[in-house]
Image (cartoon, rainbow over all chains, first blue to last red; front, side, top):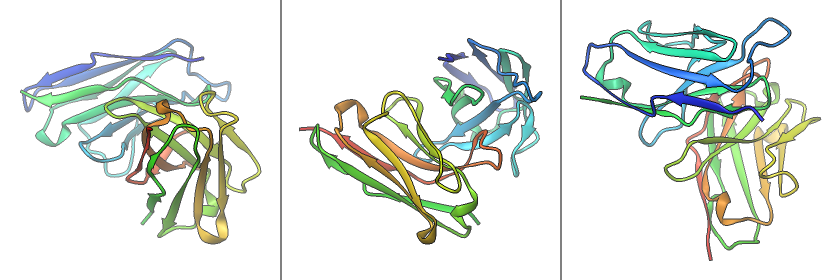
Length: 111
Length: 119
């Protein structure tokens, strides 16, 4: 089974400052078709998760440009260039090359 | 606009059964692979099951295989999850979610329904 880990598990950020979340997989997430199956979600209080990033680095419709994704193989990163109050929530990465596995989540709050 | 609403959650005793439903509106569910994903209280997300758009193929997490059955009725724009032999560890909010066109990720989610397994 693929194990997905995230660091840190908790992050407190001053508004306007950047934030970065790491997602690591126990196996390569590069498919033979050339696509890397990594996705990022945010879950705000009392809501279902919302898709932020698909295929490592593509922003989903309506996602602000301050969110970006990068990485390859087994190591991936979600960055928020300037955190805003509305970015508070729990961020999950997802791999889907070997069934579906979420990371444990990173809780982001505002200092 | 894609809209999903789950129902059927509640409190059930260990060993009993429950059936969840997920009704779609604003789109035709028949064109989408559909999933159930759950989240235990205060915990992370666990994918549970997927059914292909035409209902011909299903896959399950090992934790529910043999106990849960995913199905769909495209004529009713509805997804189901039949849960048998429920255990305390099945306690969670259950979300239904659409697949993207390639079945690679979960695009749209419902608000979830809470299932509590307790005596």
